[in-house]
Amino acid sequence: MVEFEISIQERNFRTSAMVVKNLIGIDLILGSKTLAELDGILEFKTNTFRIAPKKLHLRPSAYVVIKPGQEKYISLRGKVPPYLRNAEVIIQPNRFLSKFCPSQMLVKFKRGRTSIPVKNLSHKTIHVAPDKPLASLHLSQLVDVVQTLPSQYVTELSGDDALHKVSAVSSESQPVESTIVKYRVKKYPHLDPNDPILKLSENEIIHKYVNLSQSLLTSDEKEEMYDPIFENRHAFSLYGELSSCPDFEVDIELSNDDPFLVSRNLCSRRVLTFAKQL
Image (cartoon, rainbow, N blue to C red; front, side, top):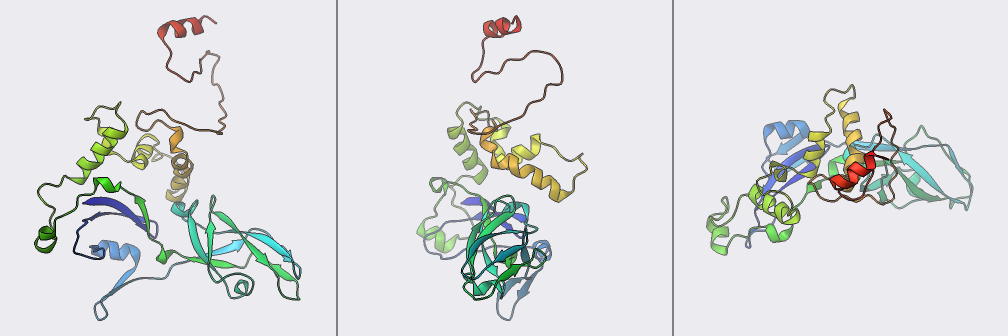
């Protein structure tokens, strides 16, 4: 059994899945509240589940002129959700742009922006204005697994269990939380096995110790503040491990004249005493 989170249209849902030998596909149980949040529609006649179309329009960030035979990169921007600001997605150009680009393009967002190559194969000059959308992204077609578990920690049911006990986990299997904790104990041996931090994900630790509940930011702005922290999470000692942050500059402004020592390793009291005398 494996537990993970899926993100659908900016909303996270925790899901439990069982891996069995004789079944094909994935079954999900969605409650009425989930359907309401997703604007989902259940059609019992056709046994289908549909999510209301949700399209994100991308506009050029500047006015661009492309002469016949010329190729230029056009920077696109839009109100990209926080979970997609640095993701790879497939966008679709509008009817005008589809004459000069493929019908679907795989692009990489960086801080909510991306760029696409456009070559003018016509005999007329192309004028691209920033107030008109050039491409779109269908958010309803996105499903992103944001938390995964290594395959060696997945419990597989036997053939008999798969046939007669599909809705239950075998008695030999372990709870998902216990499996995740054991995985982290092995990964971070310096931590006590009973340390409560082992039950928290990296994202949960960041939200716990970087508390923005008292700030004046909106909910979207708060999530944007967490984005660069999560992207550079290896620079922080989330589980007490040695962090690494190559080629990353930090500006430090001192609030007083008290001296301090910056060291890559833990210092002994003798070294600290000597440093204070400098």
